[in-house]
Amino acid sequence: MPDPLTPREVFLRLVHGVCEERWEDVIELYAEQTHVEHPFHPLAAPPLRSPEELRAHFGIGVPPGAYKGHALRRRPVGINVHETADPEVIVAEFRYEGTVVETGQPFVIPAVFVMRVRDGKIIESRDYLDHLRSARARGQLGDVLAAVREHHGTPE
Image 1: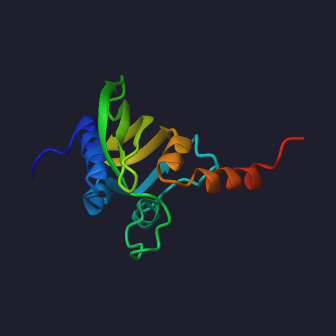
Image 2: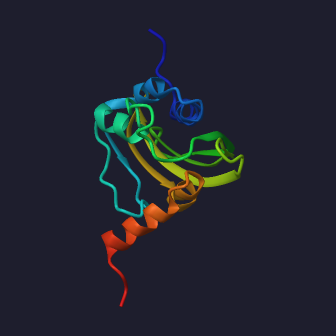
């Protein structure tokens, strides 16, 4: 049996798998019980804890035409992986760069992931990314801002 993937290798497979839309390969990188948070999510999304929740998050199995956003062609760039004193934990800085398929508009979405990988599987991750830039690229910024107003209320 081969050695399990290192945290760095898992991260690289994750971001490249997302960009190449190899969703089942991406899901396989996570432990059966995981804890994935998006602390900067504007609607305070709950953690993802199972393969089923991850599939829903990545839109796996969504019927054609049901997705309401623009498709993105992207690649991870500026990757800088920092190893920590804990051999299971890495901090990865990077950005997704690409174009909106429907419009050709370029976009950049900066991100930092703090990941714990055990036996080659992601058991915990805090994914800090610019959700508003992502929503803008997908043509969903208006909907997201309306949802933020509803979720957080309007300041007085």
